[in-house]
Image (cartoon, rainbow, N blue to C red; front, side, top):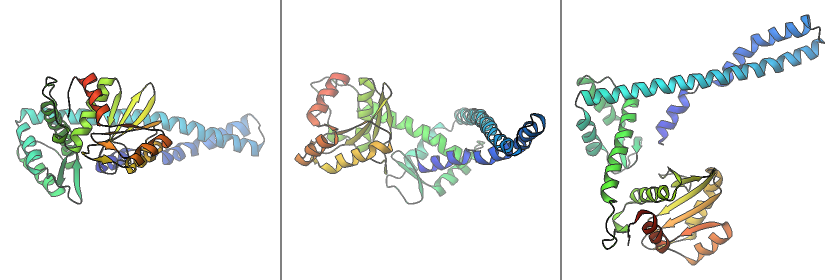
Length: 294
């Protein structure tokens, strides 16, 4: 998830503590009156107990209210997003969105730009495209446009991967050298899903050592993907191991299209990190995807 989307999600959350205090204040006086004047409890104990009851009750009310608010807000956003999608199709703007991604999504990541997958857009370009869409009767803002682009980029990426990773006979091998870093990560997503894992694709700049997170039987495994033609040093092992606590994983796996140095092999044993080199990876790809890679 991009930083922009993370900030947006944080902005959507209400100030929980404010609402707890707002609700707890009148409850404190209500419980205090009942405990001290009706039940005749000692004043000090009555105030302490009313404070506890007010805070606990207010917290429960706010948590329930927050859950309802989140569900309603999420439903509203989903309906709004689907409505925009329908309008894009009905207005014949699908090709325009696709062309915008392919023509304006600079390969080089620019400073202060919005980045999604392998694509990068300046804020000026996004704003300008919003104006273009509005001229064609589509009501949309930059944030909603980003949501649409995110979905379209995933569609484009899936098409490219589907084309490049089509199953071929084993006597027509595929080449690791033809894959970019993100392509290799997506190949691993396909592989581990075939194995039976639920896979979260987290790989991007600043991923804290995790390109993939594998989940099975309640356990989480961190995967560091290294699409190298040479050797992988112990830096990759350290990076993967350091990401365990950050991503709440129990085990780290480093997968490469190359081989590992002696230092990496020794460090992996001491840190309990699993290493998957080119030979082992090739075996797994044949077994689970019926694909031969060289």
